Length: 284
Length: 109
Image (cartoon, rainbow over all chains, first blue to last red; front, side, top):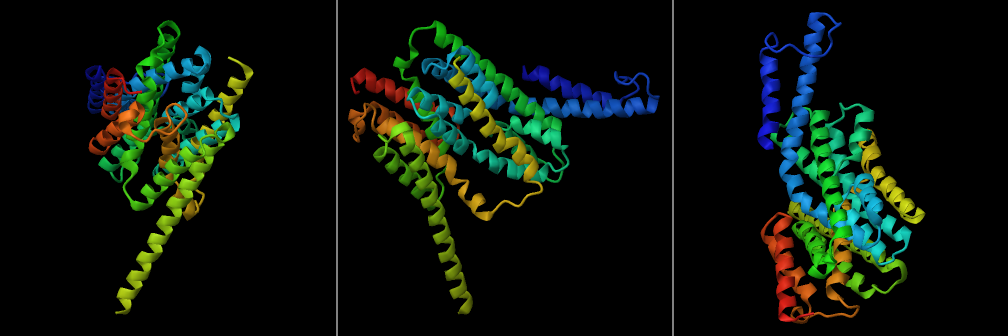
């Protein structure tokens, strides 16, 4: 499959080098010069789009099992075929979907589910923050539409490209390719999972919830790189266990907010101590 | 699909979209307060820990802190160790599942 995709940019390159051999398809009514310029812009866009798809391929292949897992979970907690699919196409946010479906299954209050979804997706603010400064040349509609498809994966792919080519503006088409590929793959995988859940035997006995929690662990363990982050994690671990019997899973929300607060305060204290030592050294 | 589920999905959809699309538009012109920037990295850690911890530590409603009595905790610890060692998503999941199945086979609840 990747070979096939790779041939598309190759063809586009050839077309750019020899426009007289491979005439542009678009714009027959325009003057020859205008047509070739428009054709070239179209080819560049196309090339960027497929480059995005190609770069995202390893990620959507490793993401597919989780899409399938989500389909199984969604069916098991009673979201239904349509509901499960709507989760993947309308919310389209890996871990938040799992958390929301999981909480729904545990009978959590709707405000709690929505709040946890918002908190889990708050990291997209970081991505948006990073991308917005580097994509200031995109049209507003483009940023709005593409923002809908912004995920961990499409951000990771895009950030890697930006690092590899500093200074070069990021083509909108590249981001579109990476995120649309993820979207299609995620939804297909969800559909397969839903159908499996609906037709097959009860898979929950094989511990597929263990797979979901292991995936959560795999996401947060690499983030534990500083003392304040460990403090935040320890706080929310302790409180989430202690407050687990609060109604509507409200203890979960309390544990999350307390963890964030503790982490933030620890970081601020550490920073002020650092500033103090620096000032003392300067005085000497 | 009931009305409630539909409403839930739409609300989650709106909340998620608000964090992405409009944020991309606003952030190029708007100043984001420093404390928001500094607090954001803690959010995913705390959310995921708070969801995972009760599930692994209280598998049947009550606290079981010893891994050799708790298959879920053993699986989680295995996943954590592998996650600290390898930076991909799939191998911690496989490790967690493997340990869980092993525990089940050994009769650990």
